[in-house]
Length: 235
Length: 310
Ligand SMILES: NC(=O)c1ccc[n+]([C@@H]2O[C@H](COP(=O)([O-])OP(=O)(O)OC[C@H]3O[C@@H](n4cnc5c(N)ncnc54)[C@H](OP(=O)(O)O)[C@@H]3O)[C@@H](O)[C@H]2O)c1
Image 1 (cartoon, chains in turn cyan, orange):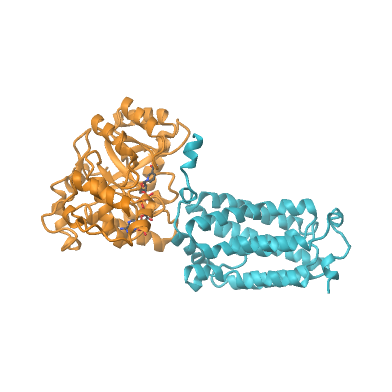
Image 2 (cartoon, chains in turn green, blue):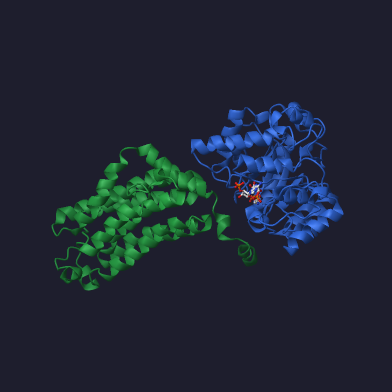
């Protein structure tokens, strides 16, 4: 295709479904798993608390929970529900599942540096407040986009853990979340579902904040660094 | 097509109206008794098609959402009740083909449609497989029309489609473009190949096709299907808040939908326009444009001038 021909395409030309279909995904997934989503809510609330602990096993648990959340939302939301109307969502769905498996495998080896209180509060806000964006957009309370099921909230809540990893692993783990955030932002923008842009924006803001208070590369060389988190020294 | 003769009977220009006036939904303003839907002959055979068909890009891609599948089934039902028959789809449109298939099954309407799909693959050897897969998804034995989507690998696909047509595996063949892309190449294909149909974008704002493609198709005896008649909906967003011109009634126009669609189907080279919608009320409005008088050449010029000034 010539360059001029490409210029005749707009973002909208690549989105093959309407906003109604997208918003119904949140409702359908909630109807399909009812009432088990309450377990995910509890798990989501536990996540920042576990990631705050200085002992190793709670942080391992946090990584495992994050892994399960990625697998759950990757397979159910993305592959099963979203994929049939949007082919790239299937690819992302499998990437989410892969990322989830990776997190489960890394559980014992790569522990996130414990979260400070401010980051933990950010995590709780993500779990409790962000789901309402889908409700605001759709006007239907059944569209609540919960952690472990909806990708936006799952990504925003878990980038906290990825940002607290050693340098190389950190960026490896952030590849899929960053790609997804960009892809979903473009999709929401072209569908005119502007409230949903809050998901990728929140993920990026949290990532930037978490990176700013993350351990230095020197500390990061050691996967199991015993040195204290700089943030912890803050009053 | 399973029962060709019955479908032809239903969608034939004069006789179609018999089926239509018998529907209570068509009473009153939409189609007065005796109104015949605008129909156009396919130049290569003389078979008539209703001048408004239905597109399925985005609108029918609802996946496995049963509530939306049921709603789109009602949209299709309205389309058929109001005299529509041409349905256009493509393997590129996600789950649309499955949703069309499910709706046709629910309505038991497979023998009442003119089924048009596309071949959309860069692999020139996959024509038959893709046609067969699409037919399975629609639940029909074969398509009435198969079009090479966006000229993709058109040489290879067209060769196979010709062979399929000769064997009776498809009734008509064609080629598509949209958004005014690759018109020169399309013109060469129309000039050099034996096509039954060509599909392109034409509406009151995008009038590039008037210069060369529409006259050429007319001259070569190629039927023209018009896609993006509402410019993907943006014509409504731009003009719906404006008043219709005060002479609109004389041209048989009562709504903006009729304004846009009648502008298209009154072009002598156009066979049918294929607007897409998710809504029953919009479908009714769009199908109403297939009835009543059409603007003449002078009124068409005034229509184009009117929107240009807005
Ligand atoms: N290269 C190709 O082969 C090609 C390319 C493009 C399109 N096509 C075909 O052409 C078909 C039509 O093109 P399109 O779907 O891109 O765009 P279109 O038919 O020009 O516009 C569709 C939009 O118009 C709105 N609409 C329909 N009727 C309306 C009414 N009465 N009042 C207000 N809004 C109305 C619909 O919204 P609502 O749902 O709210 O009614 C929808 O958003 C496609 O579906 C596809 O089958 C083929």
